[in-house]
Structure formats: C-alpha cells, structure tokens
Image (cartoon, rainbow, N blue to C red; front, side, top):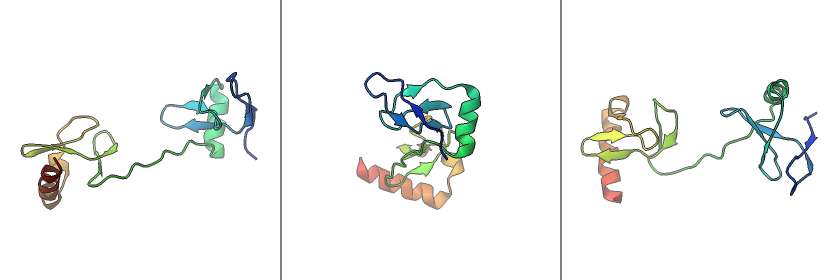
Length: 111
C-alpha cells in the first residue's frame, strides 16, 4: 500500500501518493509537481516502497551516455575531437574508432 498524504500547495491540496527523485532526494506532488517537505525517514521509506519519480528518456539520433557525467545527450564535434554537450569534456578516447568516425561524418552533415 503506497504512502498517501495531502499536497501542501495552496492551489492543489489534493490527497495523493508523492514520489521522490532519487538523484536530488526531493519529494514531489504527483498532481501539481511542487516540492513537499518530508522528513528523511519518510524519504527512505518512499525509496524502499518504490514511489520513485520516473524520468522520461529523451530519444535523439546519435545520443550516447557520457562515461564521465552519465548524461544521455548527442555529443558535439569540434574538429577531430568529440565532446559531451552536458559536461563539455572530451570523450573521444572513450568511444570506439568506427563509431567516432561515423559521429564525425553524420554530425557535420546535420550542421
């Protein structure tokens, strides 16, 4: 049975099952998406019960997971180097040579 509480937002005030963002450890109302003040014990309980906010995955062509920042983005090509658009670090050495060559040719075409 999920944890149910009332939203503290004056515009919402609905009974709902809040969800927690595992990265930021912030609890949000599932109706109006405002942040709720919940004690640390209840945050741990939300995680253990599985009331976790699911991130919508953005799908784009040639996107890769950066080995340094773990974000899924389409990299940028600067001359011969390939860099992550999220953390702006060079990730050429982490990518296989055939895939890097394909990225260089395809991303230059799209510009």
